[in-house]
Length: 226
Length: 303
Image (cartoon, rainbow over all chains, first blue to last red; front, side, top):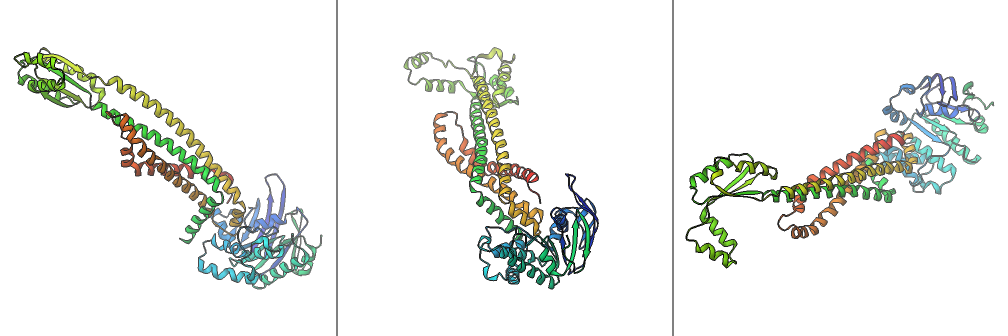
């Protein structure tokens, strides 16, 4: 369960990124956060995985309040949230399998479990046969699928995808959205931050629209309206 | 356990990926240790030479001929009671004559003139050794006791005080210079470690970002840098030891020849205290490196 109550985020420079945002996302939902550049979409995403703390208001993720979470608790929170970015953030010197395994290794997961989970998640993203390739040997869409596989490694309750299709062509974009929908069907909450009109309109899922840091609309089965 | 092994593996990866940087860091750290060891060697040599000279500081009191043994024994007893006195040797007239003849065995004229005398021209003598060269002046005064003064013909004092003072001054100056140099090297080492960690953080920035995203604990991200600092300190210590011992093995015979009468025992000192010396140097260096790494992480690593 994710709940934002009157959340504002003001950067030290004085820029107001979010203004009194209130939002409730239920477990298993697929929510698109849309809006033009600079409307606070990425700030909202960063609040969800505790990369930022709100200036005002409450951000409740699971049992944690991001506003007053202790620094040693942040890794525990992040192990329950998978994060996917536009630039993939893969390690170029590691193979596909090693990139996925890395997420488990740094969390202290044992070798046996690691050998079990890595092929499983690579199967989900349909990259099992490319496990030994390096990111540079993959297409953009495939690299994003590796990033999603890595995000899935901890079996997260939620995936926050910040512009995951921003660097992809139409075909690969469809692939990624299809994959996110598939993951959502397993019960994982998906928060998709995007400004891709076609993607949002095709999804027919909940759409939260931000404008100048404020929620201007929140619709079940919404459309991109800006 | 598995997490600890991974942290250690990451630390080795850090060293491997910035090998040349690690090599420069280790060289600087080893240079610092070599300077410190040079000071230690100098101190050991100075201590050894000083001890050897101090053992020779003595005062010989020559009694008039015919002074009874009882008086000489009283004087010896008085001197033995002084805390500054290490030992008192009584030389009988017969022994004195024997020693004189031995000393002048090649000088027939001197021997003949002594033999011309029908009686032993030597009286009793006391050879007094002090505990430290600094007690020399005190002993000179003590030997001039009014009770025994009329019986004493001559006092012979081998004064090594100025020699020891010069040695001490030179050693102190060299030690101060060495300490200054060590301090400078230590400062450079701190900066080098700081920079090494800073560069390592920069090299691994992508990895660190991913680690944070996937929920690596803060200590898990920081620990490899600390281990790297300790690792570099350990290699530098081993390197310093690997230079110090062979150099001393080569140097000691030459020192023995040079200081034939006052041996500068540096190698035995290092062989006897090697584990303590290099153990403490490692602990000190590792502490400095870890603090420097912590400072670098505080400034440049966000976890």
